[in-house]
Image (cartoon, rainbow, N blue to C red; front, side, top):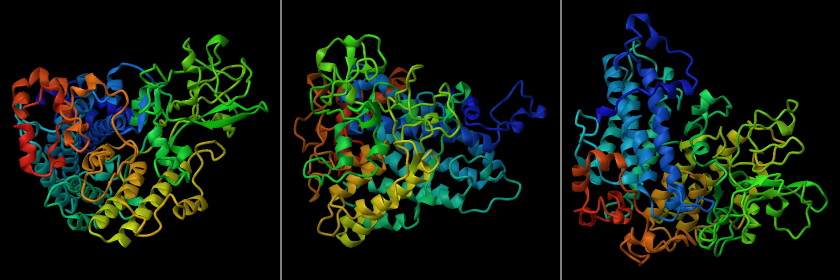
Length: 622
């Protein structure tokens, strides 16, 4: 796949890199650059940035499957993921970001680092190599691996077991190299590391966290050992300070668009909405829920400004799109804007109040009477507003909170959400996830006391991790204030949280992990491990309460699945079909990789780690 190899320097400049002196040195002839010129530090920055694109874009697609977010009614490619019948055009970007922009540059980084014995750069390259290919396994299943980065332009496919074992072995090599001492002549990892600032201890904790995550993904297998996972987790993050985070910035400069958060770019448009399932998870209003509201709710879901009966603006939280209702089949919810001149198409917040048709309308172009109330579904879009002029320190000057402005008056159409603002942190692997992994393993071992402790630690750690970012905002702005310690303590002591070993269930652990891992592909991995809402994994019962196929699942969707029985693995969304680049340029190897590779039913074919045994896996693909 070296046919695709090049350095994406534009990504480097987008990340605000201040110096490229090595690259531009006149002795290296900048008019004729080649693959040996860029330094290890310059290469690593580009590789990290592009890997995050592949990884977080995979998470975005997982969100559409797991009911974290949805969209207004439509028939675009990504809408079809929500309908559980993905189009190949919606499947290509994670593959392209990984193979073309990231993986193809890793061999040159390794060559450069090996030449100067820069062991820490070698470790970073090996870790990202393993993480990227494991992500491809998670998303697509079988994949070119052993021949992927060779000179072959039609590399053979490897099965999931080969990829998994290869990635684990590569991760072990990375761990070994991070523990070596570099010579003083080698570049410092701090010069090129945009994740962990060159801190090899954090890289090691990341490596062990990934190893544990991938081991836990094999929980269906007969030889799965929770204690072995716990042994690895003992070397992973043990505080929020140890997490690996991609830090983004909000900017209105077009040339700096690469600074903005990936989830901002992926889902912050006027059509993206949160789902009822996700909102119910936060408000604990799912079946048999406690009804105790999570203090993270108004941080993780948007609100908009509406005028109350007293003529004053107030914030009102979005409603969630019920994917188990007919709303999207009925053309809704429609998008809306502010201050329409056509009062006949005005959409008013449905509160029974006769509102001023001039001052207090969110409007769209719809003429459908059934859609007149769709302003209760607030978009999650929240962008930099460089055109709002206000005095410094004025709450109206919060440049991250709204996406529309009118010269006569101002409304905030959306506060946005924690993970989808332009400067939202990318939590790649952090301490809260480690806590929940420990909680699951202890629970599997019957050590409920330890499981309860880690479960509560995970909840607290995620709120405190959110606070680390929230403290940077103006604390007078709605939806961006830190979570007070008293609220954290009160929630942890409430009926929403298990207070005893007897009350703790796998569902409670995984519900809280889902919140802490919002927008992460790991939530999709976890749903697959527990067969979504089927409730047929050991003695755990239904882990994802109220979750099922969306209402839009129709006869066309059904062509992608070979079973109508929820207890059957093939009832559920298991993987994406291969990217169009493979079907266009490597078709023969693709056909040989899986007997259903070119069939719609590939979407319900479990990947290797999602099978109880090798025999089961090979029965699917051979």
